[in-house]
Length: 241
Image (cartoon, rainbow, N blue to C red; front, side, top):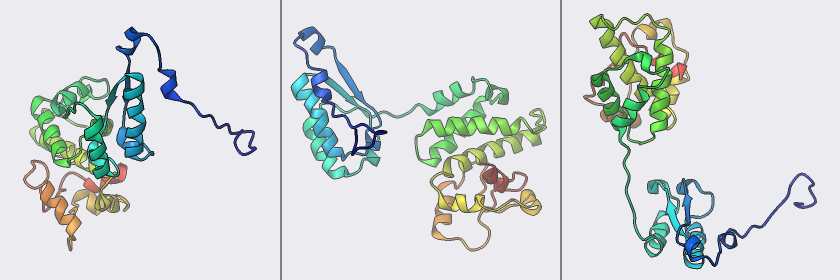
């Protein structure tokens, strides 16, 4: 019982001892995987020291899955890692293959995105900068739900062009929203009839953060830097998100 509280129980568990065995066959075939290492609330160096116990005392193979750019105390982590980690593999997601798989899923396949449209999604996602495919998957899924409510006729060239601009802008807005203060500020305003028809995302004085966004997506098809919206309501997209 924790501090006399009957609703809480504290236990101390020696995980290293759980994996100890005298069987050589078992020792050679045990693997422990530590996933999302960068999200651990324990200090990264302390955690590596803990992991090292499995290697030195239990002869266990360890795999650490980690986005190293986000590891706290990165310098100390790198020093300790050199002594502990035998091999490092850098893994990059195959974004195009992921998009192709997403487009086969029920609820998304109704969009009938062609190869060119899928490549546009890949290009804009690469511009976003992070590699979170779950965010991209959710963006396409939600986009599909929005399009389902529209009278979209892909055989009409004008509608197809608008659809592709809408798609590109939706992915940008969706993926930028969680971490971009400027995008969230725009989303906080209720869209009006006027800015649904013509909404300049960065009308008026531009601050440095806004300029950085413009430069980031400069020359990207479907995102005109000076005026992101004419027929496509970016403010409506953001408000919906």
